[in-house]
Image 1: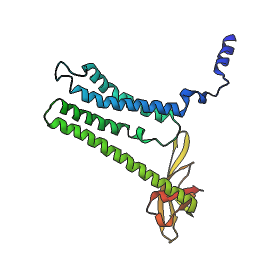
Image 2: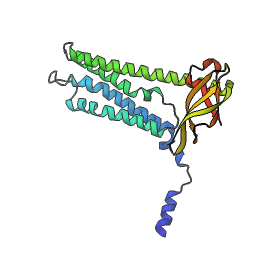
Image 3: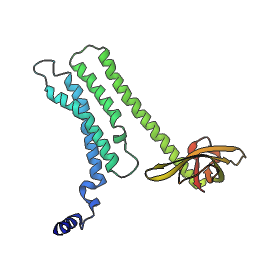
Image 4: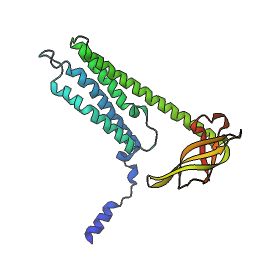
Length: 236
């Protein structure tokens, strides 16, 4: 009995646990940025140093330091990304997080190129690989930004639909129900008639269980029907 009472007292507190400094979004964000930043620095210094460990006996970096930087770079970046993804509230991730792996490829390729140049290594196939590393990072960052731009445009379009959209009654022509995060949802194909009298079809995932033949209300922008985000399911 005494043990149970002691455990209950320890479990209770007069301070909201979410207000403790190590549980705030700011602290976890800073920790995530620190891990990613250290990982990128290690990703640059490791390859840079590894080319200079064998130049002569007066090398400015010991071999263990170069190997250590190469070893910890990826784990640090992954740790920072996971800390932000699971520890910070909010759906949007800032560029330091979404660009973490592309930046790793860029700094690693740059470190290799600079290290090879400092060591006097003649230009060859190795440098081509390092340049490809940088190119992969740049292309990946560009793809991430393109996706971010499309998502921002789609979000703006959905807001316009909710504000100025035209409503129409549609019929579910295809339905597939499943559970997502313990919530039943249905992937539906809805047929509706637009303001010009043309039949249109749209595929959306809606909360709840629906079957073929069910009627749903859709909202859409007549001038932007070429974009999937211009049509939303707004009710039964």
